[in-house]
Length: 508
Image (tube, rainbow, N blue to C red; front, top):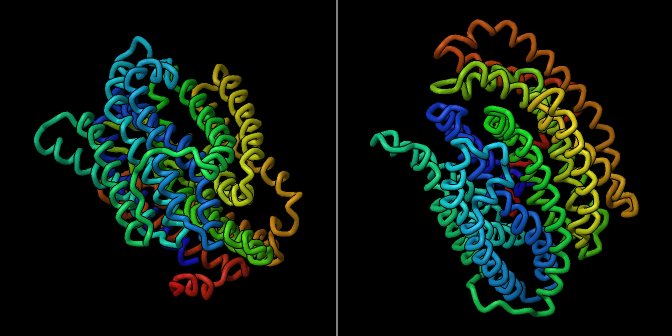
């Protein structure tokens, strides 16, 4: 539990700084061509990062590395081999992407063709793409640290990205420079800083990872055999992203609206879902290696319990008060009231899918801990078909919001497929009696909190539109929501404060 709280704390810090970053970007760039070009350029290396590092390499690497530690094998040598192999692939990919950038941008947002956004996206993409080289290596080193139980440095690394990007923009604003280009140039430098941070942390933890000549050893063959289906699954997830962005690129400003909404719902998703996934995967791998099925079931149930206890009220809040959240956080400078209304609509739709995104993070480790990456690929393929059919089919009827609806429904389809896929795993993949008892109470407490938030929003509406006062009004809404939820949850027996208190006591 202490690992979850460490990851959650640093992820929260990163997301808060991310809000500062996004608020600055929207204030200076609005949702116009420069902002949309930044969104596409920044999403490009992140898409490949999730495909190669987090989506494929790490889901294959972490369980194998964890089991080597559990079995007393030379895990450091395996990490160095994996590092060298990944580095070789990334260098080749980065060089190829520089040459093919116009085609990559067309593949990501063909609706930009013939517009100002296209040329800017190509320029920004070439500057930002080397970020993948450094951040993917950082992701591998973070996997090493997480498997060793050292979560702080890996979780803190993303904070550097937002610090550097905010600083780059602040300097450009101060000297009267080009804010958009300063922002984009900060991306590769942030990648270097993140990679160095986790490299030194891994070295301090006893794993010195230096690049060497790639070797096609039996261990690397096994790693690639496990990673390829995970890469395909990651590719399917990225195709979902690609389909949504492609459809949105044909609607004015829609790419920017969806990205801003994505940033807002990523806060609870990052703090809860990603934190649980990072901690749960190595823990499950070690317990399964030790044939501790009871411990694995308890780890899954407690991780699911606390993550959903924090996610469900967040989802309700995103659905009930999206306009106050978006207007206070983003409406200033070049961002208009029309932008706020559009972003808030997308936030509400994404909020309905938030529990599904978190459940995916909880269920996938059950497969990856067994080095089973083929089943999640098949499920992701099914979710991709749902996403594409809804986004492309509904866009001519209801417009750009079809992309958000498709993303949410595809996420729930993925959860249903993952859950059905866990049936052959037996009791280790089943939630225990305590989870089943508390879950309905958590749902009820979240809905009761939603009622409190709605009444409070109506009463605070005049203040939410006043300059200066709107920040205090939003803070009151947030405090009321948190206070009412935890009070309802405690009275209903959904949560116990003593458990949270105990969770904050770091284990030796």
